[in-house]
Image (cartoon, rainbow over all chains, first blue to last red; front, side):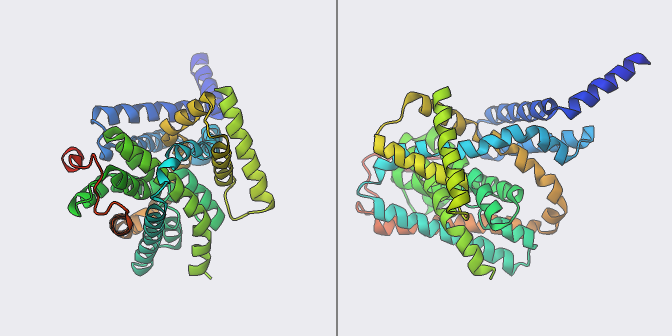
Length: 242
Length: 127
């Protein structure tokens, strides 16, 4: 009797403190990473998707609301802004590579960025998607931490945007190498740059594992695409939603 | 490590202030990123503390957007209703963006057509 009462008290205490949400987040992420490594870094076994699935299932099981979970997990969420600032370092490391190639690389970046926004938003509108869904597609082409910041600015859901950004990264890291092979696109720096534009973080870490030059160009493209997105998406949004 | 974190928090704070006062359409962290990048280009060097913090962040970047992404549970009805649209838009935008940017890069590249010195084995090794 008293024992079960004290267990309930401990449970009430734990679920009220950030400890449980933090533990759940880190434990799920660790599991996600482990599965990803076991799968030989298969992009379809993406550690983030596994982590999110584990956490949502656990929340459902222990009957914790998302708001309550976020109260605890916000300490991790806060670091997202710092991580965005830290993207300056990979850009700086790659920026010397722009010398002599500035014009083609920047134009490829702008083309990829704009085509990505207009094709995804256009398809959503044509197929009659919800306003919330279409809104989340505006910023999804850039790396998730920056995409969420942009989503806040244009008043669409940062959550949906982050999820679509991750899904874009996964889709891109599977499809882009196949597309580049199909059009006989061979130079490492070019391959890396295209992978960085389209499949940002997930593609970049894969590019690094295949070739350092490709990885450097991929992280350069990913960072520049983030800056370009932050500068242009709010205006494109206003243009299409007057 | 601590000094690197301090530098990042400093630029993040600076970015937030500029975003609030001058450029409300840009997220503070993005302004912080650009300022830090300009600062590094001025210094022409990355100190080891800053580099180690940045590498740690980029290694575990995925973890940091988990709390926000778990919010997906609030959107399950919309996702189910629009599943086909979402899948189509995701795949097609990736294909169009990759094709268009790759073609632009090929047409404009100085060493056309892709004559990089270590490119011969590219196709065999890549996937």
